[in-house]
Image (tube, rainbow, N blue to C red; front, side, top):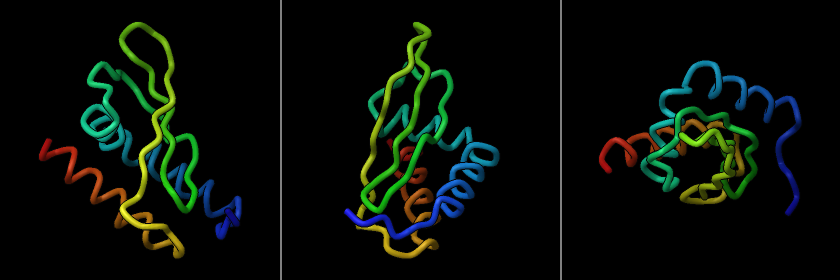
Length: 93
């Protein structure tokens, strides 16, 4: 798959999610990622197909959780829409 986003864009999205939306990411991986035992999370990477989180669980281990987007991302503003969708779905779960 061709990566449509520069490293700078990916870095900016990761930084924003990890600094400003850590609680949202934790709720997402607990509800949608199948890890209700998550105690902390970092968004590790993003690509047009999905988001990958590094999740620390209660036992102290770190697991990788990959969650797909509802559609392939081709434009930067879609990231905001997809993370908001995931957070809404997690809150409803």
